[in-house]
Each structure stands twice: as C-alpha cells, then as structure tokens.
Image (cartoon, rainbow, N blue to C red; front, side, top):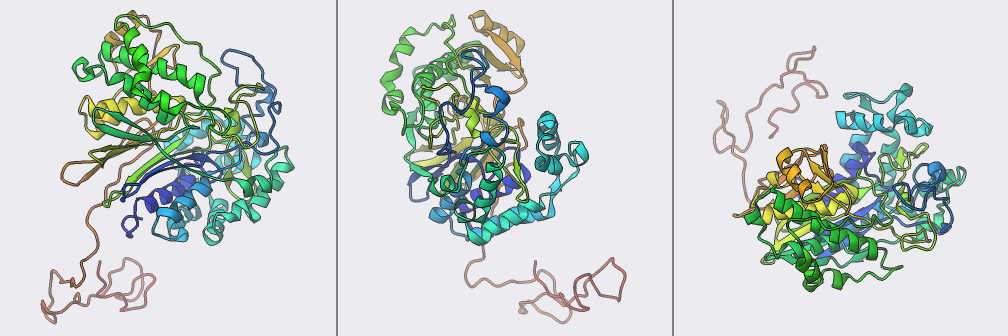
Length: 562
C-alpha cells in the first residue's frame, strides 16, 4: 500500500485484512481490538472496535464452576469459551473499514486486494502455524468446518503444507464489493446468525446492525519528557501503563542498570500496584465508573513511592477475579513519511477463537464472551451490549510534539507490562529498537513472578531473595513490534523473536514531474536522446518458436521498462 502511494492507515488496514487470511487463529473480521492513530495533522484517535455481549445475554447465561481460585472464570461445559454461545458481537470489520474511510486514501477494494489474492492462492503453513493447530487439535476436531480447513484428513497441517482459504476469499471479495454492511446489515450476517441460531448461539441481525465502534480520546501521560498516548477504558492498557511509568519516574533506573535485581524488583512492585488498581477500578465506562484522571495523576503514586522497600517484596495481592484474556492476539505498527502513525492490536481472543467456522464463509468466530465474569452482580459480569476489559496497549510516543516511536504486542494480561519495559528500555537504557523489543522481560500481577531465562540465574536468585516467588519462563508476552523515528528523518522498525513477525522498510518514491527515463545502455539504432530501451527479443526457457515467451505473442513485450 505504501509503494502504491497509500498512507499508514491504508497500509495498516491492508495488513490486518491480510493477517486475517494467514494468521486466522489470532485475528479475523469477526474479532475485536483497538486502533491507535496519530494523524499527520497532530490529531490523536483511538478506535474502540471491541466486541460486545449480544442483546440476549444475561448475567446467568453461564454456570461458573468455582467461586474462587484459578477456575473462577471457567464455566460448565466451557460454554463461554468454546462453541456457538461463546461468540461476541464483532467490531473488527467495522473498525477497520471506518478507519480507512476516515483517514485512508485508497478504496476498500484496493486495500483488500492483497488479502483476497492470498486467500485465493493459499499459502504455506509456517512452523508456528502448525504448532497452533497441534496445540488445540482435540478441540478443533469437534467443529467439522474448522477441522476440514486446518486438519484435512483428520491430522493438523504440517509445516510447508498448502493452506486452502478459498471460502474466505469469496467472503472477502463480497465485502470488498459491498462494504462492511455485507456483514452488519446484509447476507453474510444473515448466514452467520442463522447458523449460530441453529446451534445454540444468540447473536441476531439486530445485534450486528446496532453494533457501533467508539472514537475515544486516548489517555495521555508523560515520562521523562516524552508524551505517551494509549487506549482508554475499557482497555486497561493505557491507564495502567501511565500509572506504572509515574512510579518509575521517581527513580534513577538507568543508574540501576538493565536486568539488575534492583531494577527488576522496582518493575515488579510497580506492576503489583497497577494490577491492584486494575482489579478494583477498570471496566466498561458505560457500566462502571473508572477514575481515569486520578489513576494517571502523578500524586496518585506518592503513597507507593513512600512505602517502597527496595530490599523486600511487598505482600502479594489478592488475585481478584482474574482474566480470561488470551495471549493469542496480533499487532501491527505502521508509520509513513508524512507523520501518520498507526498501532493496532486485534484478536479473536483465545487461540482459534470459539473454534467455530461458519460453513461456506471460511470465517472463524471470536470467543470474547470468555472474558466476562460468569458470576452475577460484579463489575465484569455479562450484560447486554457490554464491552469486556482488555489489556491491549497499542501505544504512540511523542517528544517535542513529534512522533518518537509506536509500539505494541499480543500477550493478554502481559501486554501493558511488556510495553512498560520496552519504554524503559528505550528511554532509560537507551537501547536500539531491536534491543528494546527483544530484551528479556519479567511479569507479575501480584502473586508469583515470571522472569525470562534470558535473565541470569544469579539475578533471578537475587530477586527471589527479596521475597518474590520466582518462576523461570521461556517467554513473557508475545511478539512485540515497533516503528521508531530516528534522527535525520529516517525510520527504523523491529520485531522480536517471540512470534512470527517482520519489519519492512520502504524508501524512495515516485518520479518528480517532468522526469524522463534515460536508458543505461544503447544499441546501434538508438542514442541517448531516445526515451526508449532498445528492442530486444524476449528470452524463454519454454519450448516454442524463437523469441516466443509464455503468455505473449511473438515479438510483444520488447522495450518494456522495469
């Protein structure tokens, strides 16, 4: 899209549609997410495209299996997480197309073109793709339409196998021709609702027709001269990221050094405080009062700072109601030369969502209902139209009023704590973009502490000696990516090792008006004044008449510029 002259919004939306083809276990048009946008004119927007509970949802629609402990959010028969009753009203397609219409420059059909080509031609399964099927193969087998695509013959697709997404290609082509109303007010929605209704689901055409995205004002904070813009509630990401940075700003983290026992202890204590506040306050602002201004105020963390003991862990906090946020999400960060920046985190919640594919559409459905509290009477209990709380933290950072970097990742409740560490890596430890996203991470929500094994055993032991219950892990959070604005007007990008991910940079541009092409080599019949390449016979390895190439009649194609 950028090479075709599009802007960052065109490119981000095209990438999300393409990811819905090649990473269907993470993201899809029947999903949910947040898009953080900074426009070249300096405006900031967050498009809340999170899923909502259907109008027929009730606080008693699921039967909880436990009133406390790790199974607090689990429901009898896994009805809130697997199958047709687990599906929430989707926001992804509407938020993607609305962002494109508001701030993009290209037609929807052009932006969706690459995704349609990928779906029509299929693609080769990566090792990561294969592993994702294997992880849930026994559940996928219960849903014939999903199994036929990703487990043909009853076995998971192997690395290198062709993935056939031709059904989804037809769905995307219809949306490209008819717009998002093909789902929200049209025949695709009718197909989905009819299928769900016949199988115990409760989403109706009215639910789809009445779904609305919300253009929210980003939550804003400051850290050592940098301005941060993140998603506000119902996302917890932006609020508690800023809250933790307010705590850290009072300490000389650079002097402590990256990965030291002292700096890790400080990070963990800040995370405990943030999760304590999250458990108490954060929810859908249409249903609960969230004191955002108080939570992000500098004075809010004064008691934390006064009571911090750098040699001793504070008491573990109660786990609260927990979270069923999945780590299986996806994130895209895009910036263009004009200063448009997009950070978009999107999901169908758990790996492979509800595991339900609507026959004939190739469309996997979300399981965002799993994120609600199945117990009645609580802030996160199921209610019609309610959005669940998310930890997504697509973040855009400015300095002196200009973009400095944009960042995000998947990872459920580990998202905003991972963004916190990347910000500290960049600002305090002066890391490069690649170093910042790949550096070892830590995490806690107030109980046990996860520390990646990239941190030495000696340091992990020193953290444990302060009273933290340390668990070594391979990875904390998902694959992070970043775009950074470098001195001199250049951009750099990076993606980390924790998931499939790539950084792509594009330079150059279009010819200036009046530019003329001058060939580099001239034959006997041409001169530098000729604005054509010398006539040449096409070369072919295919059998046929001399000079004939596949797909062209003899002699055509000579003199083409490339």
